[in-house]
Image (tube, rainbow, N blue to C red; front, side, top):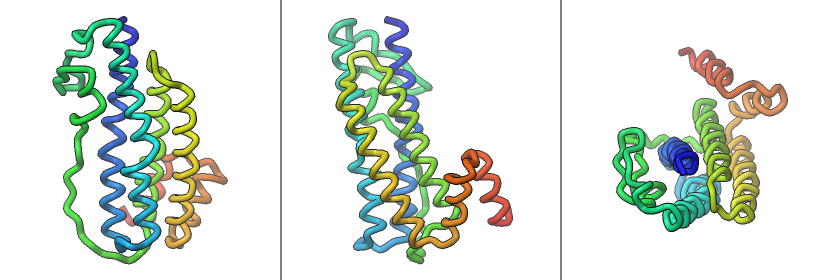
Length: 195
């Protein structure tokens, strides 16, 4: 049982890391693109109506089934300073939201730093999907289907953003063709930005 609850704690931590990053990306998209643009619509789907939301639902269902078999009291605990009262509050309602001050500059393109934010959302989504896959009693077939949908949708969004952002095209080549790790890419981006 202790091992099972630790898996739920890991999945929750990954969800807590992912959701504010997705909201941050969505707000940056709002700042850069008009509401009717295909880029903002794609970012909107990626950040709000994406497969990781369905995976979060699957994780919540797995938590409920696990609690049915092992008791609700197992899920009443404090995780990373957040007091959780029931299994249903682990993946809904307690996820933090970043506080950002928008500066609307609708230039219809992303900078390299903003492309890195997009890549960061993908890496955190991949972590969340892996930790959700380790949960006991999760529907693995639906999880695999949603993970495949995420990969397809993310590739489409990345392609749209890179097409309208010339500075990102060479940088994406570094990430994809040269397989530069994301942490090194951040340092290169900071150097290019003069920081």
